[in-house]
Picture 1 (cartoon, rainbow, N blue to C red):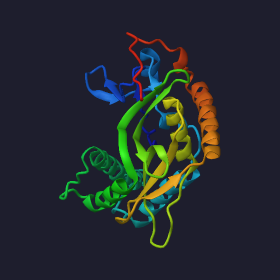
Picture 2 (picture 1 turned 30 degrees about the vertical axis):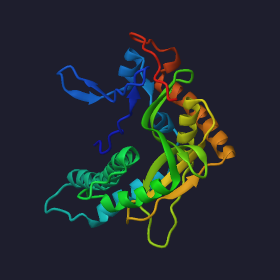
Picture 3 (picture 1 turned 60 degrees about the vertical axis):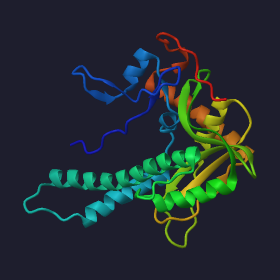
Picture 4 (picture 1 turned 180 degrees about the horizontal axis):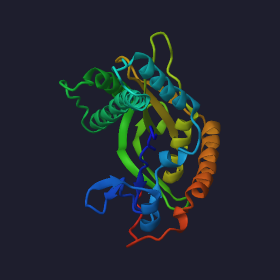
Length: 271
């Protein structure tokens, strides 16, 4: 009995165009696979690559959701073990999906704030976005760009970064939003994988800048919390990411650096 399916990976063409899904033989969209990537010369996303590194905190959180689902989900009369196990997984994954949906909605709202300073007052997360707008107006002097695809053909990866701004305190700053459920009385936590992700994006940009994780509490509307990564942390993060790239290539038996480039297009610059 198979209960869990692997998460869909994100892929990009060599010019930076996202290609997270392709058409199946029946003409219906399906998630892009590494087999498709080999044929099309696609680049893996930064998060795709970092998936080879174990993240104990994330694994523990997902396991906790599964245990809570098993403890709280009522058993149906006459229900077999397999059927109950599948419902437990579905219930646990619905909790994970709720967190993912909040993150996606917040990112979309934050992009709108960066472009227009507008927040939809009727939106379900208006209270969170209003607090974010307060932070944005107080700290961001100028927006360079928002939601930009970055490509590094030399190492063979791509990814979509959230925001590049002139920060009043840090100067040119690469910002990555992270949503996190923070219990009352606790402080948000910053994880090394966030630093590795930002270091990879900065490597693709190819110039010095500050790197900032902006943590948003999904539990209740509150002021975003800045976590600036030191240069020492970013150097270590890039080393870890490059090591993950080697493992990823070997595990997938695919090296995007030497992959064919169908109809080679110019690289999307991120300047």
